Length: 287
Image (cartoon, rainbow, N blue to C red; front, side, top):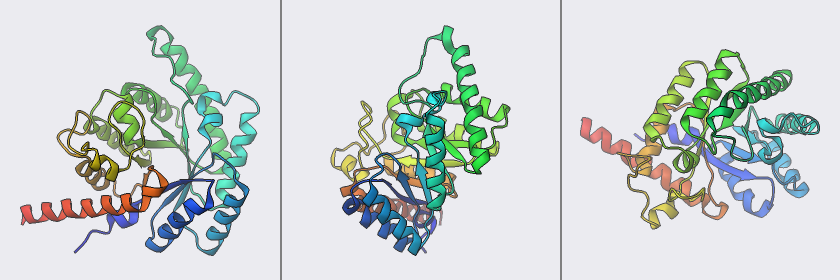
C-alpha cells in the first residue's frame, strides 16, 4: 500500500503574479489535497482576484510568504513597515492562510564577534515586536533560515524560546542551508527536532543547487545535472533520500517546493514517486 504522507504534506509555492502560470498549480493542489504557499511580493490585482475567486470556491491548506524584502524582522523598526506587515497579515487571513513565512533580514547580518551581543539584542527587540503583532492578529509567523550558519539560528531560537515568543516558529529551507551553512543536513534536522520538542512548529522549503549560489533548482533539473547524488550537505543520502527522511521525521509539517513554475508539476510528481520508491525498497529490505 502506498503511503499517504507525501499526498498530505508536499505541495507548491507560488507568487502573486502571472495568473496563467499559477492557475495550474492552484488547481492541482485543490484536486490532490496538497498544501500551497503564496508569496505576497507583487500585488498583481488580476492575480489576487483569481486567487480570491479560487479560494472562495474551495479552501486549501494555505500559508503565505510575507514580502521579506520590505518586512524582514531586522527592518521592523522602520515605522512605515509595521502597517504594511499588518495589511499582509490581514490579507493572508482573508484568504484563509493559517500562518505566514518571513525572513530575519533581507541581507546578511554581521558575523564580527564583537558585534554579536548587540546584534542579538537588536533581533530580540524586533522579535518581541513581531510576536506582539502576531499575537494581536492571532497569526503565527515561521522564520526562515537564509544567509547564516546553524549556530546563528540556535541563538535566535534560544532567544525565542527563552522569551516565550509563542507566535514565532521555524521554516527550514533545504537549499539555503546547503549554500549558506557549514553543517550537514543531519545536524540541521537534529536542531529542528529540538525545536519541535520545545513546542515550535515547522515548515519546509524544498529546492536545491550546486552549492555555490541560491539557484532554486528543481529536483528534475538537479537529476539532469547529475547533482542528486550524496554531497557534503546531504551525506550519506542522495537528495531524494534526504527529502524522504525529512518527510518521515516531520510528517505533520508542510513541505513546499520552491522551484520554477514551468517545472513545478513534473518536479512534485517526480519527488513523490521517488519517496514511494524509497519506502517500498525499505519495506522489502525489512520484510
